[in-house]
Length: 255
View 1 (cartoon, rainbow, N blue to C red):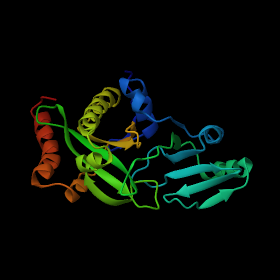
View 2 (cartoon, one colour; view 1 turned 45 degrees about the vertical axis):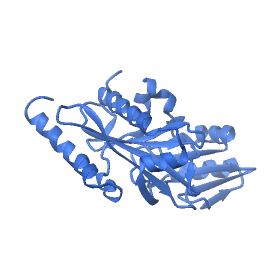
View 3 (spheres, helix red, strand yellow; view 1 turned 45 degrees about the horizontal axis):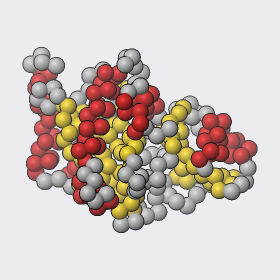
View 4 (tube, one colour; view 1 turned 90 degrees about the vertical axis):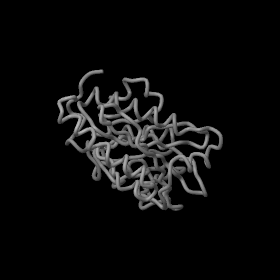
């Protein structure tokens, strides 16, 4: 895989499009939703073919600025976090003019994933992988974020739960957690090959009701504090101790 020095805008934040492009060159390509650099004409093409698309910042975080754009009959609707539109346009020309004024090259368009639901709420799964005291990647924990009923995104969430509990309820008998952990470890290894040395990342997955798995995005600076809401002492010890063990490993010149 070619080295991609521009993949990280800082040591703590990924360029989502660069990450997508790096993983597209690997065997994880099958788990990637269609993603491209934002161009107004490209967005309109996707709307014509799919009816809806996600528009989000390439370097955004915490779910800020994630738009859902839908084509409903002859009208175009803009959503920002909720199922109720914040704007509506009667023509493609009106939408294109608004997009031209509102967005620039710092955005990407991504295929909309209809998330599976538990208790009527869409959910995603986040897997945290970290390097251990031997410098090897390990899965450290998994959680699920469920959206509010009026929302299509989980970043602002109704509840946090252990990933295994939610997956077992949504997909009884399928045991998807080990597969998500394995994909996350592969993603960490492939991304490190492209971007340079890393110590921890989290991988956000969207799953359709059919069980189809999608990698939504990778996070360079995962919020370990989220695991306080779901974990016992053993999980929290792992999540916070592994970076220290890896730092010790590096201090000994073993990295």
